[in-house]
Length: 94
Image (cartoon, rainbow, N blue to C red; front, side):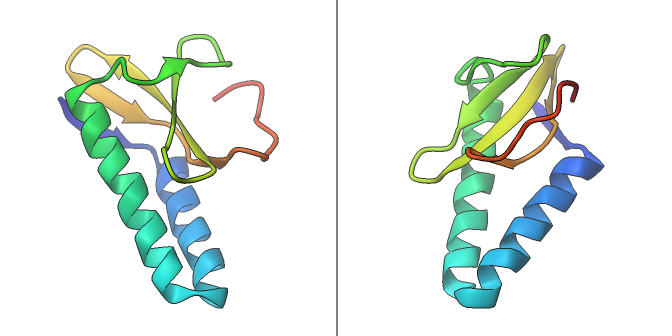
């Protein structure tokens, strides 16, 4: 399945990596690697995530992190919508 990252998701990933890197560059790299690996697994098993809190979406709670990745499955495409910290306030629409 083809994975497509939205500009928002790319920005979230870059921002969280930069934020973590200010205190611990190694942890930032590990977190980014973990998130990217989770998306790779998701491409193989798109129904791995739970039904999303926003209609029409699903959510992957990334094991070993506090991050949640909302996504949509469309035909042969997996759309990564965003990357949120679990305690972050979610928008009503994605």
